Image 1 (spheres, rainbow, N blue to C red):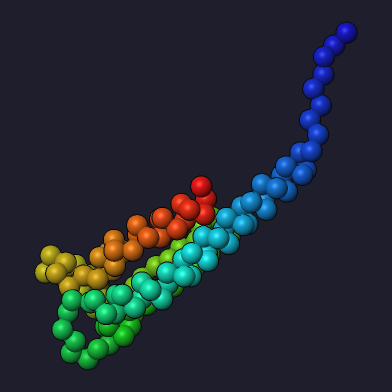
Image 2: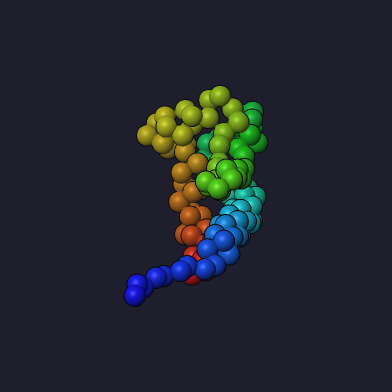
Length: 117
């Protein structure tokens, strides 16, 4: 006499895992799309430098990128070539990218945590 274990439902389990992944990616994308204009507006309104041409302020932009099955990314960046200097020169006195992320990260994390817990 021998004992045997037979697993059933593996295809359904694989499908459910794949569907959960797609739903999680969609939920994360929706959260980040919600915060995209909030973060961009905050950066433009709170940039600490004095405008000369307003090009740097106007070119600040946030965008959401989905790398299917890998990540959903919200990024904030400058659209002018000298944006990096605003961020790092003078010990970061004119930086807006990281301060904006720091200001909003707890809210983004809380919303994601509420969805996934």
